[in-house]
Image (cartoon, rainbow, N blue to C red):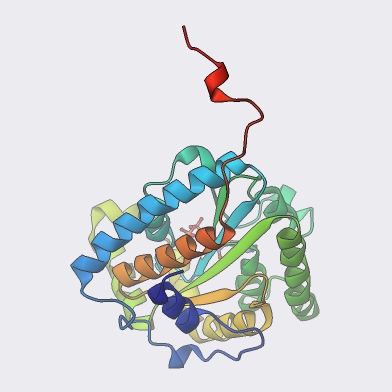
Length: 274
Ligand code: ADP
């Protein structure tokens, strides 16, 4: 791990039990990085490094990486996936977007659909939203009884522990944007016909609950950032900072995992291709 990667992780990771005040974390902070253009070029190179590491993970075939992306509407979950995994071979990556649960999903416990979407060995799984919706929107919009939501933090920690003990490394990124930035991005969706499809009037309803969501995020970060599955609060008002931070942490984590090409039991010199 480079000193720079270590500094990024140290600054952005939520320590187990830490009380995060989102107001104290500046969504526009770019102090971990240099100039914008340089950083973008470096991020492209990191995306290629992630591909090389992913190839090793796939060949090794025994472990997986789960990347959870959470953030309010317009926080840049899609854009992060597009940039950070831009060079990664599609064969070894799965992306799952979690929307409003279907009737069938609602007939099961809330982790049922999540477990089914977890990455198979050798692959990277990316969650665009996740089981954390069940302590965010479910809490703010009172979709489940208070007591049920309260139980979920421990249940989620136990679930994630089970995953890690069975070979899945977990990284969780909260994309932290400011209220003003969300306003601008929503306005863009109204102004630009190419972005109309992204606009959902329901997003405005959620925006009205901004403070309640921030509070729900703070509780989630406090209760569910663990040694085995840490949360990172990513300054996300500037897309290039967001991408650089997440790419660096993913790369450093894969390097720590250090996947190995399997040794074969045969000798290549014994074969001649006619
Ligand atoms: P996005 O906004 O991520 O681009 P969608 O427009 O499909 O994608 O929105 C997904 C919606 O589904 C969000 O409003 C989100 O809060 C909601 N959702 C996701 N998971 C759950 C859940 N477990 N319970 C209720 N709503 C959920």
